[in-house]
Figure: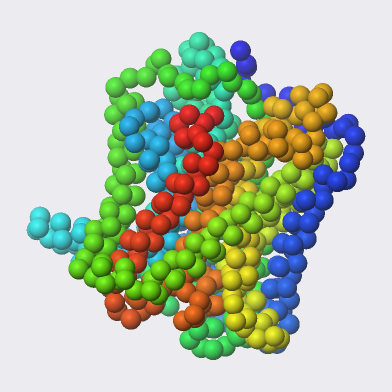
Length: 550
């Protein structure tokens, strides 16, 4: 039996600091970090070198710029708040309940995060638009429909749709890391539900809550396609959208560079702040898989059921609408278009290459970071991990803008954008992979490092015997996240895409821009099915489902 977590107990990472030092184990992380820093510096250098000289007073007196900055922070804060608080209730409900379709619901939670933004927006408008399903239902009931999916409320709705499932998955992972023996002790001591939450669950939730909220805040702060589709005019414009407008509508690379530098400045500050609030503590081991609370009752069951049903009402209707709208009279004609399948093959190539590159770089960083922590160099380990989060300070549109300006001013825009788009998407997916793999790799070190040291298992031998076997599920999840994020990317390809290089999101954007709504509905349905299939196949690489993996 194991006692409740003691925060003063030294961890395996601390007590093993005396291990023999071999610098070979640090090279993977150093190489990966140097690659990330080099890419970031090239993009930043292009923005800095080719930005026009503008006085600080001009920027300070630019009222529209301050409005854009203020709105960017405001919508990101509200989005994070509205995503994280309900996620606590939903994660606890999903942890306590086992029901048919739970695994599918958890996969759906992961899918909404990585669902291509334009596809999700298509479904949201089909439900909540002025002529959407909800409006027609209320009209049949004689109720006037006044909600508009454009502007701030539309942006918040879309951000919660994307990020509530992300927060739920991360918090559920924290709850499942609590050993069953700790819950048994709490039950034997007669803890009520509030005491179990405060004493047993909250320490684990807290270590995941603030980093999750910070990640969601940064994702919403750097939101591009959502605001592009639902922004609703100058009153609802973010910095990223202003960068895109400066490049594509005003043809002003100088202003785009200045806006990108402002975005970079704020994002670096947010990344550093998120690192300050990220913490870990010693974990326990468990001999059991699931916990069934003996104090469970009908009231708790009904409450949890209502929470899960409300989440389904948020997540399912837009996805159902995408399928229903895609099954229109144009489906056969659209599926026969060679351009559609060319775009689909391009998307798949980018997704798989970017996913593999992203997970490889993430594992390299976390491996070396853990080695540094084992040697008592926690600060250097955290610094190495910060290089992986550095890309959050270079959101897709900023990264793409930097390289667009760099290529445009030097060798010209490359004929084949494949390398640029693959590398950019791989780097943009690293924060997701880090969040998926970071805690499992730390927990693995806590549990198995003394055994590995006593048996002298290290290096590639340890990677093959321990990590790749014990981390099958998190690695498969990270690969699934990275690949599907890449297949749905629009921010990078928006600048480098053309008639000869089109991904499915870019092709969908062209269809909607040409008012071919029915064709776009078919493409959106195909992209949704492709994402769900790819995500499911990659997650199954672990050979375990979510329910049984512990």
